[in-house]
Length: 72
Image (tube, rainbow, N blue to C red; front, side, top):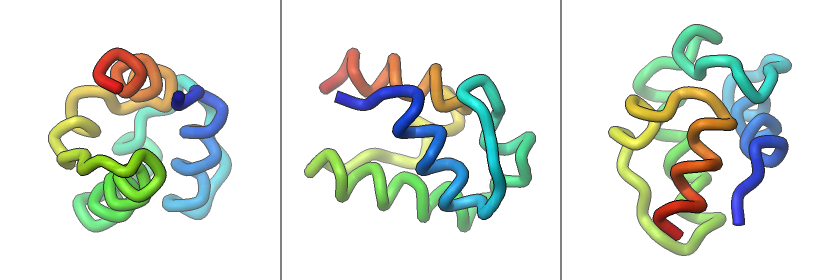
């Protein structure tokens, strides 16, 4: 199960900055390379492959956590 808090930490790690649960990945400076890094880390944690398009549709840790838990 993914939590908004865990994904906030992952966003912060990948982007190298502090962020909150309602901050948009791309508004924080995320780009295609960092999006690939984030989805690669998510896939490794979950043991399932996540496509980068998921991050395009669910850009905040809160939104992404809710969606990941819906499909898990």
